[in-house]
Length: 104
Image (cartoon, rainbow, N blue to C red; front, side, top):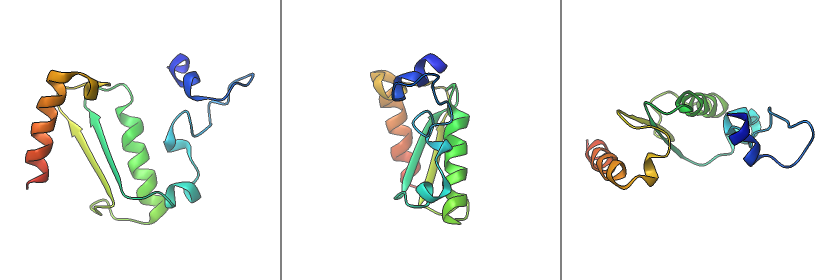
């Protein structure tokens, strides 16, 4: 994962793995509290799914929001992995699920 994370970091030696560009969940509470409404979508087979869930929890904590507050929405899709949004067949399936989910 560090090879991929390094693509997001400014050049430095050694790399700063605690930088928020590695994962937004590493940002300070002050930064997270200023974020607008957030929708986080994850695939349940995504290697970084847990980071997205941590980010949602950290934003809620920074903003003092309840888990059900619509300012931070999280949806985990079954049967998909990282990058599903660029895979046409999977994206179409997820989009249909999202439309149905939002229609509740």
